[in-house]
Structure formats: C-alpha cells, structure tokens
Amino acid sequence: MSEGNKRVSVIIPTYKRENNYLLRAIDSIKNQTFKNIELIIIDDNPPNSDYRKKVMQLMKKYSSDPDVIYLMNSKNVGGSLARNNGINAASGDFITFLDDDDEYLPNKVKNQLEFMIRSGCDMSFTDLQLVSQHKKILEYRDYHKLKSFDKMTLLKYHLMRHLTGTPTFMYKAETLKKIGGFEDSKMGQEFYLMLKSIEWDLNIRYLSVCDVIAYRHNDGGISQGKNKIDGEKLLYRFKKKYFHLFSLREKMFITFRHYAVMVVAYKRNKNYFRAFINALIMILVSPLDFFNEINTYINNKSKYRKVES
Image: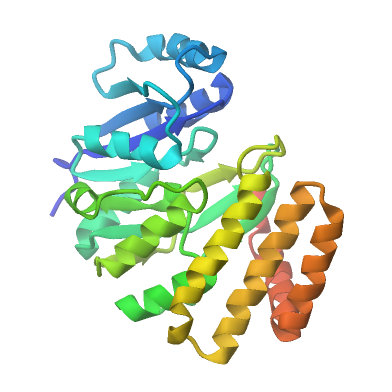
C-alpha cells in the first residue's frame, strides 16, 4: 500500500513561546519531503495576552495556505486539552505531534508514515534526541532493548523506562479518536497517552530512527518548576498501583528512577538540599542501578556524539 494518497495531520499546541521558536517548528513541517500534510496550530495563550497577539500576527503569513489551520482557544486549557482540540479538528488519515519549540528533520513524516503502512500498526514511536539551544546533545532516547510488543511487555517497559516523547508518536487518526486522545493532566501527558494506548491493546511498533530534535530550555517553564516536582510525586504514586506486576528487583528500579528524576527536578528548581537528600535515597534504594545507569549514560554520550556534528 502506497502512502501517496494518505494525509497526515501534524498538531502543534503553542503557549507562551516566542515566535522565532514557533516559526522554526512550522518551517520544519513545511520543509518535509512528504507534502500531503495538514498543519494544525492550537493557540492556547490567554486571549488578551501579548503572546496571543504575537502568534496571531505570525499566523497571518499562512492565512492563504489551505493546509494550515489556526485555532485559538477561548482560554488557556493546558497541553492535553489543546492537543485534543487539534485531534478533533484533524482531517488526516494519520496524526502526529510537534511541540512549539522543537523541530522535525525533513524525512520524519515520510519515514514514519511508510513504517506505519508497512507494519499495519495503530501507533508507532521513534527515537528522540534532546539538545541544548546550541544543539549540544544532552540525552538520546532509544528503545533497542525492547524486543517484543505484546501488551504486558510494553506495559512493564513503559512503567519502568517511559516510551516517550510526544513528537515521536504517530497514530492512525481513527484509532486515536477512538481511545479519546490525551488525558487532562498537567504533567506526564505523553506518559499517560502511551499507557492508555497500551492498555487499549493497540498494535504498537517501534521505528528505530531519530527524526525529531527536542530542545531543552532553562527558562523556568512548567517542566522545571514546582509542577514538575508535584507531577513526578503523583506519577510515582500512580505507578504503585501496578507494582503487583513486578518483581522486587523491578520495583527497586522504578523507585530508583523516581528519586533520580526528583534529583534533577529539585536541582532545576534550585532546591539543592532536597536534591541532595533525594540523591542519597536514590543510591540507597539501588546502588546497582545507580552504577549501571551512570555507565549507560556515559556510553550513550559517546555513542551518539555524532548527532552534534
């Protein structure tokens, strides 16, 4: 089956983002080698804010482009509901996402669409590179250790290591609409969407390529403030509902990972005392995982250094 007659909807929610970042994201969609793309911008800025006015001004550039849809929320509803508004408006056969400060490489849509059609899956995800503003690689997420895609294997892997992030997801549109899109959560939106997809027993597959660049900012945004800390605590309590599925060793790793994330969250929030306490707990929970993860991090930094070039 050819991808030629298929249409892909790309949804970009935007909130309190400077236009130069949003324009970079839009340009990366307009520059895709696959051209049958519907681009949906969801403006989640407060209606009377300067950010809303700036985005409205930017979107005038695309007012005559039939493939660009600009929707303005009547109030700020958050990332989950903003994306759901885009899902409801989408007319494409497939739906994928991009954050307003990130970008696709030129073959992203083409590669993933071809994979979706070839494999016949309901949903797919890919690798992801996280970089600084100067494109210095900070993290590379790949899932080569995932060898099976049955429901229980995906569920346990996701709860332990997270099969994210959102810009790497692509869905059959009818399937995404059937499961109801994103849950209304302030943090972990992509985590809960993937969890829902697994629990609905969708046909999920992994494409081992990296066509997404995600930028990490130091601007005190939602992912770095108190919401991040509260969200991670809530997520850990949520995961405990599934602990009966795991061995003691696996539960140790989930707990270790939680405290590792809390170290980073407190550090970014400049609460160094709490970061230090959580680091101690992290090491005490599982010294073995501490040394294994340090070794993995070092190896990955070396392995994917080529991304920076």
